[in-house]
Length: 335
Image 1 (cartoon, rainbow, N blue to C red):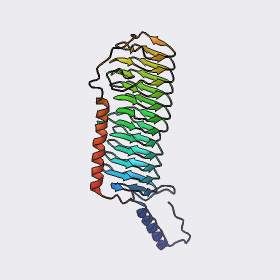
Image 2: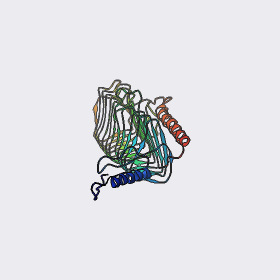
Image 3: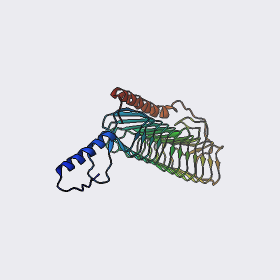
C-alpha cells in the first residue's frame, strides 16, 4: 500500500498521506498492522457477534476468543487462532479457512470457497448443510487435543485428507475427490458419496461404511478396531449396505471384519485379518473374492453401536454452545 508523492521535500504531505492511510484502515476494520508491501491487505479482527455485512479483506479470530457470524460475507481468507472459535451461520467465506491448535470451526448453511485446514491439535471442524473446498486434518503429533471432522449434508469440492482424530462424514455428504485417512481414531462414512477413491489406514478403532457410495477403489489396511461394511456389525448401527464402484481390499485388520448387504462392482480382497473376515451371502461381488473368509455372518449385538456418533456430536455441540455464549457476552464485533 505504497503511496507516490509528487511534491518532493514536503514532510507535511507525507504526514497527511500516512494519516489518511491509517484512517482508511481503521474504517475497514480492526487493524493488525500497517501493510509494508504494495500488495498487502488489511485484516479484520472478530471478537463477538457479527451480522449480514461484507468484510472486504481477511478475517482473524484472536487466540482464545470467540466470533459468531450470521449472514456475513468474508471476501478474504480466515484464520482461527489457537484456542479460538468461529461459528458461521448462513454466511459465505470466499477464501481459505485455517484453524490453529485447539481452534474450532462450526459452519452451518455456509459456503466456504477455499480449503479448510485443521492444524495439529486443532479441536475440530463441523460442517452442516455447508460447502467447502478440500479439507485437511493434520496429524496430532505431540499435541494434547484429539481433533475431529464431522459433517452432515456437506459438499466438499476436492479431497478429504485426515491424518488424525475422529472422522465422520454423514447425512448426504458429498466429496468430489478422494477420501484418504491414516492414523485416525476412526473414519466412518454414512449415507454419503465419494467420487474418487477411499483409503482408511491404521485407524485405532476401525472404519465403518454404511448406506454410501464410493466410485473408485476402496482400501482398508492395518485397522486395529475392525472394519464394518454394511449394517451387520458391532462398530456402528446403520440400515443398509453400500455400493463400491471399484475393487475393495480389507487386509491386516484386527478386531473383526464384516461385510453385509453390499454391492462391489470389482473384486474383494480379504486376507491376513484376525479374525478372518465374515462375508454375508447377501453381498453381490461382481469380481469375486480373493482370500479365505467365512461364508456368512451371524447377527451381532449393537449395544454400543451409537457411541461413535454420539461422542463426536457431543463434542461439537459443547464447543458450539460455549462459542456462541462467549461471542454474545463479548457483544458486537463492529465488523
